[in-house]
Amino acid sequence: MEESFYRSFLESVAEKEKQLAILIDPDKFVISEIKSFLNKTPKKTTHLFVGGSSVAHGKTEETVKALKAETKLPIFLFPGDYSQITSFADALLFLTLLSGRNAEYLVGQQIKSISKLKNSNLEIISTGYILIDGGNDSAVSKVTKTEPLSQKNIEVIVHTALAGQFMGAKLIYLEAGSGAKFPVKTEIISEVKKTINIPLIVGGGIKTESQKQAAYNAGADMVVMGTVFEDLKT
Image (cartoon, rainbow, N blue to C red; front, top):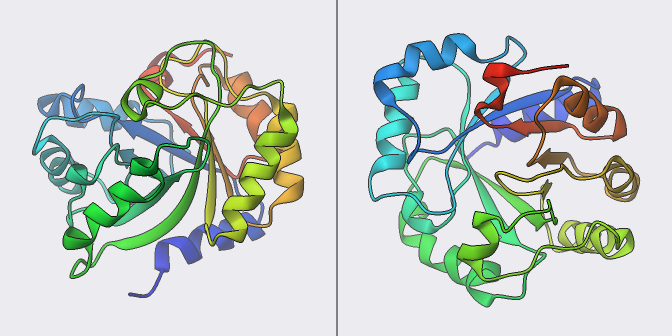
């Protein structure tokens, strides 16, 4: 299908308009409080991401349906595994865990997803996903049984991002993981942005307005935040 959401993202990047996605974990999301949740989202929110490292069966679709009934913001799936895919969303970040060497998350999960995707109207956006050390044992690391890349080795991170682009990724996503003690360093964001020519998403550990702006200033085209936005401090 026509890639309208990705094209819109590219246009925003060209216009230097920064994007903000709020990440929703279906296992933690209270659907009865959806209106209150949406009222608290920052006015500059451009996207909603839905997914988690591990989510109970059916919860993702239930959450997406509820959100679609209450908001016109585009809803992108950010799945921890193929079981979280639902055609009720607008787009799917088709993730490849470039930072790990577990074949299940390099290609296994992607193959398992095809039966759900081959007749779907979801816009599929190939995304190179790079897990960065955020100072904690993240859920992504536990589920995928992979080690995050050290923030000290900027060259490896940059080369991994560029390899993702050369392999055909349309987005690069630098992720410090949920509950990260600290976000991806601005030096890393800057070096990756200077090297790739596709949009750059940065998430994990971004808890304050100043951290968000620092990521933008370093070159992030989109910042992803969780429910920390409800008590955002400068």
